[in-house]
Length: 105
Length: 376
Image 1 (spheres, rainbow over the protein chains, first blue to last red):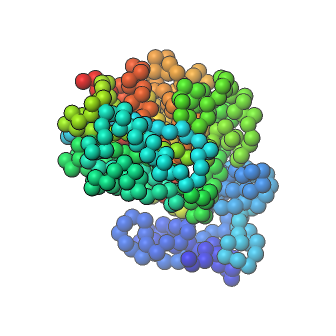
Image 2: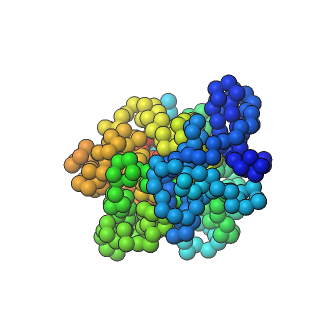
Image 3: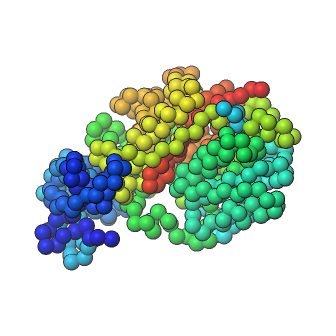
């Protein structure tokens, strides 16, 4: 699977419908409307707002981040106090493809 | 349109104690019980449909051999948590098409190992997703953890009367007890969450013509008036991968279509067997089904809505009347079959006439069947 994380540009990669501009994450080869249009890669904004969150088993923080443009990302969060509708930013935590999460801005 | 009835049923207990690898035995026991209840043998069965999820649960064709080698079609359907209703949906299509008049429908899941196929796919743990549903609702509507606990306590208490339920408390479960159970992912506590269990359940489905083969067929019976099967449609804030059941709206459109096909509306519904894997789901789905408006459900829950007597007191259906996924348990493949069995039980033992069976499958699918009581 293509990496979702672009270390060089320090952003997540999504895909975009060239006709409507709609963006998707994770990136997908074809648009969602069944027309079989091919998408194009796009860099996703690195800042969004927290839509919801929880802490699993008292230690694993998860959240849903709404990015400008309508993309929703479900992902790990950095530990801390969380507040819905507050800004969160992408945080790269290592060299691997999955070494990323969002943290409170 | 052919009339198709739930003519007999059989179950084994839902439990986490069944030995790994005992799927064929349990499926045989449930199937035998269903055929005996209906008053038929495997020679009377035109086709076997099986709903099963776990990759290492036995193949349906091997389960069929337990009953005999009679040459009938054996169809295995897997659609995650919705597999039981998915198998029923396919059986109904065959019966509608006229290729079968008597069908044995079995749901079962007992794997040979403890691997969790959902976790193996790398999905966010389901409880985390639904905890996030709950957190957002608390933020938007002002819902309190007590409201989720009210739903869970109701379902635990319904299961006290169900002999095969996984969770049968020996006392009246209280909201306080649910809230005090182990916190898993706030605001979800252990008693608000379906347990990891195994089991098997079976029904004999028959057309009116097929009923003539069943010596024990008895009225009233549940008629499956419609079956609707949908997958998700892209919408606002859509999480394409990682969500266990997709956007909640899939339940709204599927149930509305199923009710419409059956010629009934939300106000006609007496009982609902809902996909209550997590307590927040039941609350959200009751609104999506058209029973209540967003924001008014919590106040109704506080007064006892959706529990015993709800129809008379509030004009609202009773929900998860066998304990649902939370208390009867969610052994995957059998869950939809248990819903059909519970609806038939309520039609026979209570004054209920219209029921909804609703399940979601990871990926995401939604399947809904509308059942109506038929007295002759």
